[in-house]
Image (cartoon, rainbow, N blue to C red):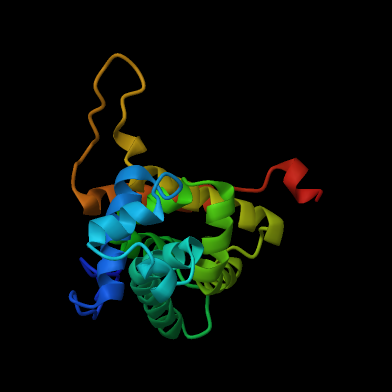
Length: 223
């Protein structure tokens, strides 16, 4: 992999901790992470923030808007880094396809190495209604840009097949972020080959790139 695919350790939030909106976001993120979004009431959030129960409606209008604001604060810096890395890779490729492993790493690494990792995974494991409201708003551009790059890198795959495989890759990422990858599945304790983030990333890149470039099955080519 290219050395320039480095990632920040934490998004830059640029917010005043004394600002009431910032206090609400901090309290909401902590409670959403601990309890889940659906199980967290607005009253619990304002109580944790030490604010009037009406504060959320005043500053955000609704719980849905607050959830989106919390998610955007953490995920927007991750997506900016994804797109910046992709732009650099495409510029270096000069119109040719970017190496598939580099594309996979550019998508995975920014989220794996930030404080948004756990919260992002929790959002995706909420109800489909909540996820359906957040994902298009936050990930639409990233999805479209990476799908275009993957299409150039894997021209032998049809758009439906490539879209399905890209979603499988996202699922693997969320599985790891949520911590499920370390849960024992049998009597023996799970011993990963390496506990470092970088080693985990490289294993995921190798695995997902192989899955993405695998030949399409006969039933897929007939679609």
